[in-house]
Length: 197
Image (cartoon, rainbow, N blue to C red; front, side, top):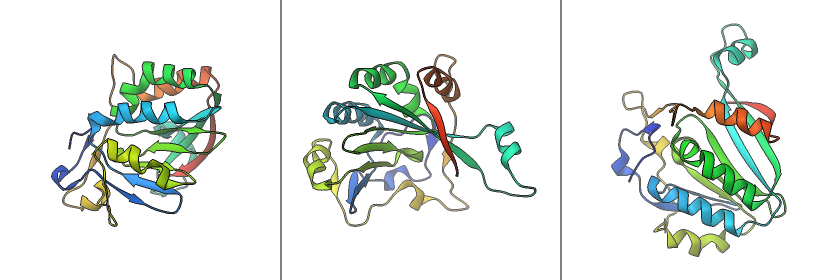
């Protein structure tokens, strides 16, 4: 199992390329080198108009301004870029996909406003496909070597106090994910809400 540059798992050998099905969601891990192609193919199947979602940890200054005295909880901002065409999303992925996929601290996804089908890439590259009909994606997942399971072992299941995972910010060509966010704001991305991490 190949990992993204921005993450470290204590026992990567325990993670399998498997998917688990829920009522309106499919959750899976897949080897990192396959994610880009899978995301491109998912995008090609989506019905326009589309949107991009980006979740980022608050900056130190934002966190300090928000945090209550003595609170330990960290937060993330959830940001959306609405009303996109496939071409526009393809261009975002062309320019920023390598960084978004490799970065350890951000989470992002692409989705259809029309059908609400969404692929969301979480921390530690655990991936969810939200959809009304999970069965419609079975062949798509199997094409990438994923096997169905009733009990998906996730990266989170391998963590303990003695064996934590590590998610870190990375930069590619001197750019970090916060600069990507700044660029997407120029295209219309907005902060929708702040959530606990």
